[in-house]
Length: 398
Image 1: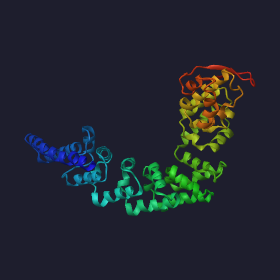
Image 2: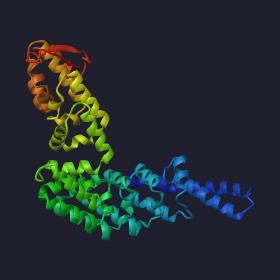
Image 3: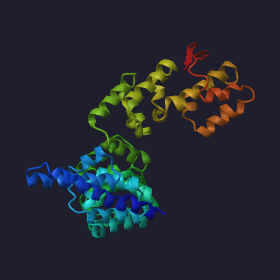
Image 4: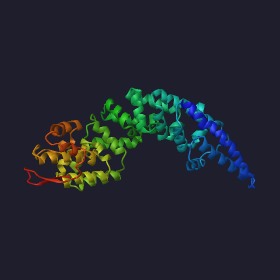
């Protein structure tokens, strides 16, 4: 069914458009005096016409793409489109690929494109996922299958074992992992992890979930690994490779800006390092989000900055979708005397969804019917002042 749809759209329509295009070119030729200029105009307009009528590109995209390629004959482009068609790619996939990488139309479909498409499909890539994968990095289709792609994947598979895990790693790396030589980058970086005692099981997780870190220049990777080790993070914990990932994807300037954001609320250097050791991913949140959450915890909930530092997971959560709804539920239950005012707010906010709902929502939905509305955010941001018996201070849970 897909093949029948493509051929009239991409090939038959193209031939019809070229006939009308020839008439257009003859009109131009009557007004042109220079044969060289005419030839250039003819080729450019043929390219634009083909990109629009055969590939489905809008005029602006076709004009832009025509600056990067010149179609003198449609034989090769037709073969490329037919190849993608027969392998299940729809018109949107093809249009997006050509828009991002116009020279693809001039690639050898038999020697260059077909082997790669069939190889990745043999791994288990769906057509949709494969289209997105090719779009993520145009160099994938230009990388040698035998010399680079297969050897790289064979190396990775010694750690991740299954094609499913391999596909997950490839998607997350956006193909960047193929731009690194095994001997020059991947093997040295893996060896560096092993030298610190990182178990292969964690190296496997790093490849599957955080592969971009392993594409870093080996000298830079060694420096980051040494820095993480100097922080006292246990190499046998997942925090070690997560810390490496956090440091490799962030500039030193951004790191310092986020560190200063925490310190501006009263965190000491020791508290900052403790938070990072517990949850290295905390530094991947934007500075704006970190300040907003810290402001809420300290100014609205009247929590001590040192107490917040012990729960860095909270900075990975959404203020609107998780933290405020839970605070609203606690407000309501405290106001009705169903929950004591000495509850550990940070522990409650940090608990799992299932645990929170069972303990504070389902348990009280009959005694306090409003608890569902509070949890779903329908009560808005009404502030209820609650006095803590321990501090005799008002607690404002927005």
